[in-house]
Length: 520
Image 1 (cartoon, rainbow, N blue to C red):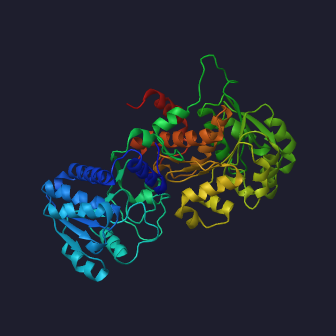
Image 2: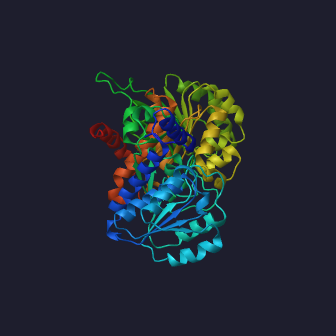
Image 3: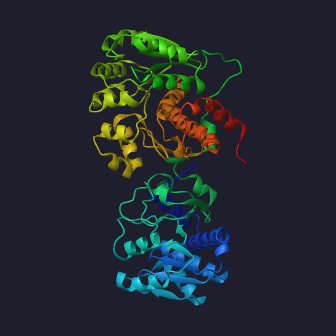
C-alpha cells in the first residue's frame, strides 16, 4: 500500500486542483463530509453528543468546519472552538467557516491560552472530541494555545478523532517533536501518511481509516511509490517462483555462519529458518566445539566445524569459510557468534572478500561498528543489515532514543550512505533501500518481542536471498512473512509467551496463506 509524505500529498492536491480542475473547496468538503460519515457510524452510540470540534486556522481547521456542519445537520450537539481570531482564517477554510455559521452554527474564538482555559473547562463533559488543529503542513513543535489544547485533549476520557493525522505528529516520518494528540481514531485522506504507519506516530493514531476525497485515479496513480506499507498484497507480489520441475538446487544453498559456546540456539534457529523460508539447502558453519550439538538439532541441515578460540570462531577459519562459501548462493552471518575479537576480525575480513549476497545480524553487526571500510568494500554487492535499535545506535554512533525518535530517517540515511539495505527492527520494522525507497512492515504484534526472533528473521531473509531474490525484495518479504507467522499464532498465544521456535513451523504456512487468500 502506498503511503505518502506531506510533500507528496500536497503535490496530489496541487495536481488535482490545477490539472484536473477540481477546486480545493470541493476537496475540503469531501474530506470533512467523509470524516463526519465515519464518526457518525463509528460513534453512533454517543449520538447526540455533545461533541467538541477543536479547529486551527489552516486547512485542517477548514476540514473541521465541514465536519462540524455535517454533524450538526445530523442532529449532533456541536461546540466548535477556533484557536485563532476568526479574521485570521483565510482561503477555502474561511469559506467553510462562513458556511458553518450560515447554517446556524456558533464559533467560540480562543486565540490564546487565557481565553481557551474557560472554554475547555465548559467543554469537559463532551462525549466526543474532534482534533482538527494541525494538519500535514505544521513545521515546528506545537506551542502556546495549540500545546495547551493538545494537552487538554489527552487528559479527556472522551474518545478523540484526529482529522488526517493526530496534531503534533510529523506526517512524513512519524516523529513527535513536541506534544501530540493521542487519538482513538484517525481518519486520513486519499492515502495513509508515513507518520501514521511508522512509530512513534503510529502509536498515537488509534484505528486508522482512509477516506477518498475525489482525487482522480490518473493523478493518484502518478503519486510516488517511494514509501510503501507492506501488506498482504505487496508481499504476495514479492513471492519467488516455485517451478514445478524445480529441485533442491533450484532453490539455492544458504551458508549460515553462526554460533558460539552458550549461543548454539541462535545458530540452530537461523539455519532452520533458512529452510523454512524455502531455500533448497542450508549449511551451518560453526565452531568445532558446538558442531555436535547443532547437528543433533538440525537433521536437515549440513554442518561444518571450523577452528575456534575460546568457544567462538577463530580467524584461522577464514580459508575454510571462503571454501565453504564456494557454490553457495547467499550467506547469513551473525547469530550467536559472540564478541570475541578474533571472531569480529573474521567477520570483517570475510565480508570484505565474499562476493555473495549476505544478511548480517547480531554479533556480526557489532563487529562492523566503527568499521565503515567494510561497507565501502561491499558497495555494489548485495548486503542486508538487520539491526535492532541498540545495534543501530552502535552502527551510527548515536543514542537509542535518537534512533527511535525518527526511525525512518535513521534507516534511510544509513542505507543511502553505505549502499546497503537496512532493516531497522521493531514495531513496524523499517526497510530502507540505498536509493531512498522505504518499506514499512504491516505485520507482527507485541508478543513477538522475545529472544531469538531476530535469528529466525536472519535465516529467513538469507533463505530468500539464496532463492535469487534481490536484497530489497528478500528483506521486505522476509520481514512481512516473519510478522505474519506471528500474527497467525496470536489467537493461540496472545501477546506474551510466544517463542521464536514457535514461528518455524508457521513460516511456510504463512507463505502458503498468501497464495490461498488473494484480496478481493
